Image (cartoon, rainbow, N blue to C red; front, side):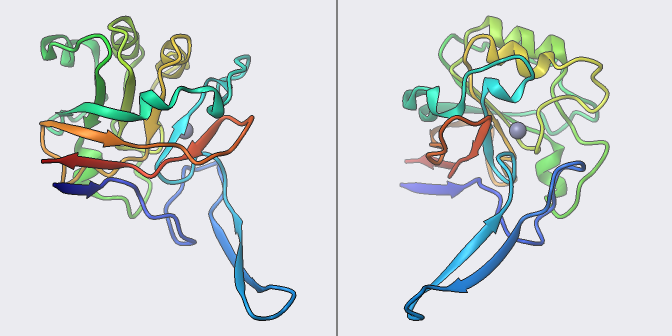
Length: 206
Ligand SMILES: [Zn+2]
């Protein structure tokens, strides 16, 4: 069995989406003085994470309302790293995407690395999101901190999935992933009532 870690490290010098906040760690001693703990300042969309419907203004379902079954099981990586612009419907229609598939989109974002924020990142256009949601997939994932195309004028690349309760994984590092089938394990940590949560994302192959 091979386990590929596709989570981004979360640490104070991690890159972050402009307009959000950087992560900060501040260690402190327990009252007894014998233990060290760390105050963590970050946000729900730092590093590899899942978006919940509540992330879209006007929607209400929080990250703890997803079913665990979405986050574990067969998944397929689509290698779209040849694309120089955001992923459109026509880039996906020939991929035989089926109901209940978990789909991860590998783009040139992964090949460029995750040391800084690039304005010309590859995202998902609204028509592509609507197409994927129509296929009733079980999960979508992408290798950037946001799924929305950088020139999108609406938020459909989020809401198309949220309306069908399809989790959106963002911030995956797919540099080492092939266009292949894997078992995905990407359970969110146990935040309650909020719009997203970090995931420990792994691709498992045998
Ligand atoms: Zn997010």
